[in-house]
Length: 193
Image (cartoon, rainbow, N blue to C red; front, side, top):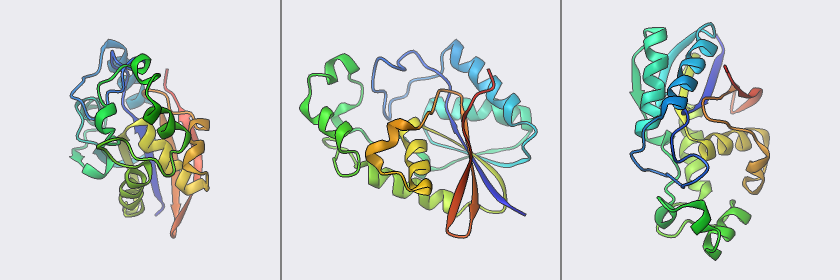
C-alpha cells in the first residue's frame, strides 16, 4: 500500500492577508467554514485513513469538519504547528512593511531567523520529519501555508528562498506520494470551491 500525504491548509480567517497571525488563537470565519466543507468534499473519496492537525484553533476547526465527514478521529501534532514568527506575530503586514528584519526574513528564508522565533529551516525540518514517518495509507495533515510550502520545497528540491512560487490557498490540499526517503508531488494547491 502506498504512503500518501495530503497537506491541507486551514480555511480562511479574518486576519488572512492583513495580519501575521502566527501561533495566535484566531478561528475560522464564515468563508473559512465554507472552505473547510469544500475541503472535506474534495478529500472524501481519496481514501483518507488518518487525520492529523496542527494545534492551532483554525487548523483544528478545519480538521473537525473533515473528520465529521469521514468519521475519523483527529490527532494533534506539534510538528505541524505554524512557524514561530516570534515578535512578528500579531503585527499587520502594513506595519511589517517598515521592518528591516521582516524584509530580511522574506528575502533569506533559508537562513534568517524570526526575532525571538524560529528559522524556516527549523520549521520545515520538524514538519518533514513527521511527514516522512507517516504510515502506509492516506494521511491528511492540516497545517499552515509556510509549513506546507516548506515541506513541498524540501521534496521537490526548491530552495526555501523560493517558496513563494508555490501556491497554497486557504482550504487547499497538496498531495505528496512518499517513496523511500523521497516523495513526488502529485497535486499542488487543489481547491474544492
